[in-house]
Length: 94
Image (tube, rainbow, N blue to C red; front, side):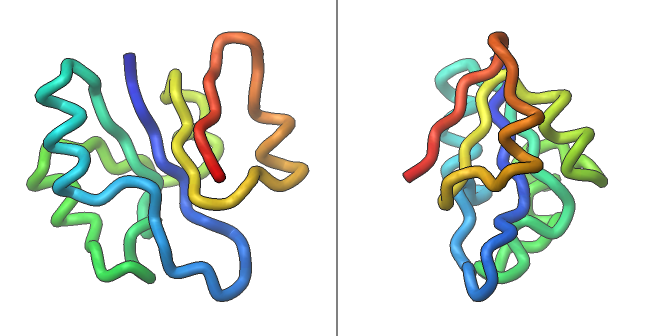
């Protein structure tokens, strides 16, 4: 199973649902992790930090949503993101 975290789109949101450290913990549990490029910037995490933690950095939101089985977000999905959900995906968010 692959857990993916997209960039948060809400104005002023600086949190990210996956950190490099939490990704390491998830990988120890057997999950693969991926993140949209730039998703951690506002929280102080670079794409390079995620890559060093073994997280696949995916360039686009569409690519991230397509690649992940489980989507982890801080905020609820917007209309565009809701259209990317299907029966084979699980969404985790507040």
